[in-house]
Structure formats: structure tokens, C-alpha cells
Amino acid sequence: MHTVTPIPAFNDNYIWLIHAKDSGGHYVVDPGDAQAVLDYLEQHQMVLDGILITHHHKDHTGGIEELQASHDHKLTVYGPDNENIKGINHPISGQTESVWPEKLDSDAKIFHLPGHTLGHIAYLIDDHLFCGDTLFSAGCGRLFEGTPAQMRESLQTLAQLDENTQVYPAHEYTQANLAFALTVENDNEALIAHAAKVKQLRDQNLPSLPSSIGLEKQINPFLRPEQASIKQNLSRHFSQEVTDDGTSFTLLRQWKDNF
Image (cartoon, rainbow, N blue to C red):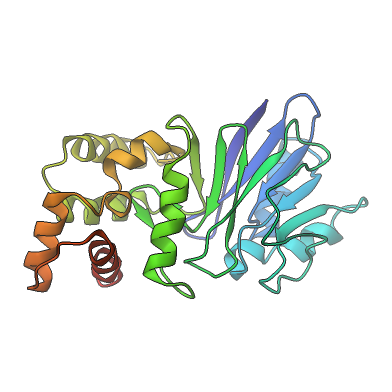
């Protein structure tokens, strides 16, 4: 069994702290800010055992070196082997299906998710999905390196997970994503209800996360490009007929990039 706690960093990042109840281990996911992690560990009298990295962007990797230097024991650092990330000592190849960090209570299933970056990966530990910048609540990551087709396939892979799977993206982007989602699918009752719930949480400065795969399949336009109402709004916005799902997804990402 594992518990997951957010450590806020920068303007809108979450560094997720995983606590293994049986093994007593502590791991952080995508620690871009070492000091935020060190302060949290000191405040709660915790010892860090390792780091899980999803991709190479500095707001996800920038704290690796300082965290390693701040510990007498060597931290295990997992991450994709094809993204040139300094500090990884347990590289994950494109053929790796799972890893088992020593002080976790179960293995971490690996998902290879090109789109945001080409080597982006996610970790599924029990029913906790750490998906970096691939899947956000009501949104998805920008396509810095991959193609719309790659991102769509990556998201479809995650959408096949059990609907109770808890989703832990690396950013608090939910309200901005919901504003866009409501623009492209304004008659979605689940989306309208969730937007109201998230507003209450954020008004209290509480995280909108985690989400769940089941919820995202109801509210996230990037998991719903086949919906007729979305295609109609895309057709209207881009002044072209949108009929196939691939074009729908591509235009959704293009619209969001300029929203």
C-alpha cells in the first residue's frame, strides 16, 4: 500500500511524494525543485530513498543533483534512458515493462508515452498513475517533440486503465484546462459539475488533483475527440468540416495552444 502527497513547487508544479506503508520507503516524482523536497522531508522527519523521473524538462529534473548531494546514502534515480537526463542511475529502456524500486511495496508498471517529449514515460504503482506532462486533468501536454498521432495513441493507452486509477499529473493546470474544455464541449454535464467542484477547491487553495481515469474519460476533450459536439465546435472554429477522430484531436491541440 502506498500513500501519495503533493509537494508544491514553482508556480504550478506538484512533486508527488510516494510513501510505502509496509517498506517505509519514500520516493519523489519529478523533483524540479530540490529545496521544496528537502524542506518537506525535514518538516515531516522523512528520509528519501529514491526519485522517479518522467521526462527531461528541467522543471521535472532540476533537483536531482542537489537531492543526491544532500543524502549520505545513494538515492536510486529511475528515468528514461533516451532523454539525456543527468543523474539517472537506473535507466529505463524502451523495452522495460516494469521496475521494482527496493523500498516500494509493489512494482511500478512503465508506460512509454511519446508526445510531449519522445521518451516520456509514466509509472503505475498500485492504482496510482504518475503521468508527468502527458495527461492532465481535462487536458494533455503540449507537443514539444512528438506528433498529434503519437500523443493521441499515448492518451488512448492510459484511457484503457481501470477507471478507478488515480491520476497524478505534474501541474495544477486544471482550471485553465476546464475553461478550454467547456468551450469545446459546453453541453457536457459532468464537465460543468466538475468545473464547479474544482473552483471550490482552488478558492480554498487546495489541489484539484488527483483525478481518475473514469473522470477524465467523461470530461477531458483530448480523450473524447470522437464526440459529435466537439467536432461540430471544431468545424465552426476552424471553418472546415471535421469528421475523423485524428483530425479532431489535432485541431483540439492546435486550438488549445492558442486559447
